[in-house]
Length: 517
Image 1: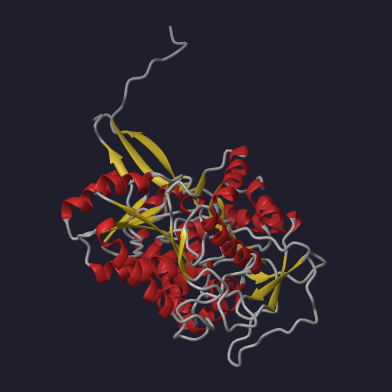
Image 2 (image 1 turned 180 degrees about the vertical axis):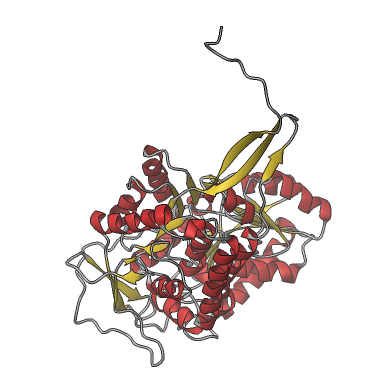
């Protein structure tokens, strides 16, 4: 699913639309570009509404950054990189500021969770326990990482020392998605600036509120002006202008595969390195040798957490035939017991989908599944009892064949597809029969089965007997249509820095003296 959404025929904000307020936290009513540590003043630009998916009421508006506004943000980043203190600071100084950013995120966690929930519909429990702490951890992790990284010295040729150092690349365009706005774009920002780069971040136009607030926290932490900037708007307008800007040196994008192709093409025109984390249709393989209850817990978390809107969702649940009926029956019973409701309620398991067009698209896959001969096991409709909001019942189908559309296309919602298999080789073949390859899950207490799957499945990550775990030291990313490049400690260092070889002779090395007779 693309992180670049559209508001068809909705380029003007309805000023009469009620704006929701919280007694303790207020959303920024008008989100503009953030440049040189401050929000720009309002202009006559295109306005995009920010909608609370739980109520369908407008909560804010985004002023779309056009090419001129993007240029202003990029040039601020370029000036900070070329002339500012950030790339030239001692590592300890950068570490101190990154740690202050993390501390401010933790101090303001309740507000950030509220803002994120307000414009995304992600359940508050998921935000409070996962995504907001993760945003703080991203800055803490890279602060620690840069204090431990080192260069290299080659001494094999006794006449020379070849000293290899890493230097920041320059100015990065960081484009984040709407399904985990702060957690994912903070990973990009922290990984980028820790090594001395400067950046322009673009959150999704649907979900700018928490990211905009973090811009203020970054400035309050003592970040020099121009190091971290933000522009908002649709991909075809703001994103395209950002990627193609002559002063952008590299691009990191998380979103849908189709949009990723356009991003890479635009970046490639300028020979700009590009890191892409794209879509997924991940296989969640449950063997008869699995711990049944843990596998059941993992399968439910893998598809219904974050409202099912995650590229790493275990959306294709492959179950060994001998336990398939029992497993599906237990899954359906648990799915029916999930609490659908107000994402602000800490007891809510599944909240609304992010915006109307996406909600309608996910619902449409129920008809797609039926047309492919799938059997509806649970859900399949708008959730009852809600006059407003993009609420969908947790849904699962039993597919007739892995080649059906419901097994091959990313749905990006609370929609699980079951497929049965007979042995490990068939399970691996089904798992690999996909154009995606981001993550995969394997549930088995039989070590040889787990190791066989870990070696043979074509995905960037294989999780064995565990749901989603992001080890920040390890690389994360996909293969095939799930993207290219990796994020993580060493992987981010490789992307956001360039190697420099400085060679110094340690003895007087004879040289030919041209022109001397």
